[in-house]
Amino acid sequence: MSRTEVDELVTLRDVARAAGVSPATASRALSAPGRVGAERRERVHEAAARLGYRAHQGGAGRRIGVVVPDLTNPFFAGVVKAVGQRAHARGDVMLLADTGEDPQLEAQQVTALAGHADQLVLCSPRTDGPTLRTALTPRGPGDRAPRVVVVNRDDVGLRGVVVDNRDGATQALRHLHALGHRRVAYAGGPPQSWSDRERRHGLRTAAAAHGDVEVVDLGHFPGVAAGGVPAADLLVASGATAVVAHNDLIALGVVDRLRARGVDVPGQVSVVGFDDVPAATQVSPALTTVTVPLGVLGRTAVDLLDGGPEESVLVPVSLAVRASTGTVPGS
Image (tube, rainbow, N blue to C red):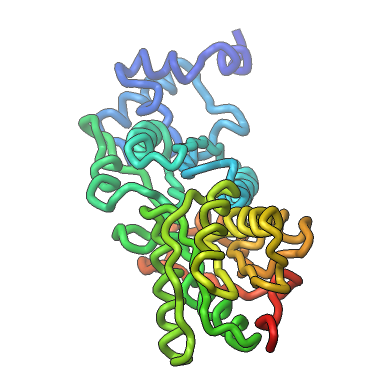
């Protein structure tokens, strides 16, 4: 039997069985040996050599686990696409988990992926810092924690890449102030969202700097279009002439609800979103929004897996002014 024939017949599971370890440990020993204890690593390499195992092209790369709160959200879909493209260019494989905005499920998924992936990208994790670090703790003897990069969260003590949420909120308020708005509402996102807290901070700071702007907090809403329905109703009741939404999906929901109530956008109320997802330019009126470079976030996250600054990398944002914002009625 030729060496090529052996390669085709011997699997990673065969190597793991011969070495007395799990397939996940065998994979790490071969693709990321620094993450496996010396004794186990030697057993795996000895078994692989003895059986004639050789990792196939396309399977020799690292496994990058990606955890997102909601893959149907275009923000996370855009980040995941960029991560996948960068991973493929490096010869790596991407493993994906969607947690449905559930912090408990997120912790479980992180623990599961930490046992199978060599590196992890956590997108806007909803889990608190201590729980997240516990989920990343190695479970088996000789196992080591994967290298982790966090996207768009900067309070868990892990290397990461974030967008300048505060500046984005500041740009939005500055634009509305220039149009004459003095009572501006904020339709917030999920209460466990770090970016929501940052955007609130940016709005408050910008309002204080102007001195003549009141920011009305409408509360927290699901980060989907349906969340814009109650937000719009509260907006009308508040008397605000403009609203900044936590993300574009909420903003689009606000516009739809206002239209259903006969409230003109931007004739009576101006609406600003955040993220600049594709739908922002596919509606009428087109949405004024803070543009977040999702591709930069995803690519930078993958690059940071191989090293870089310990502090978070800050990615700048810019305001895209479109038809959903206008001057205050009667001004």
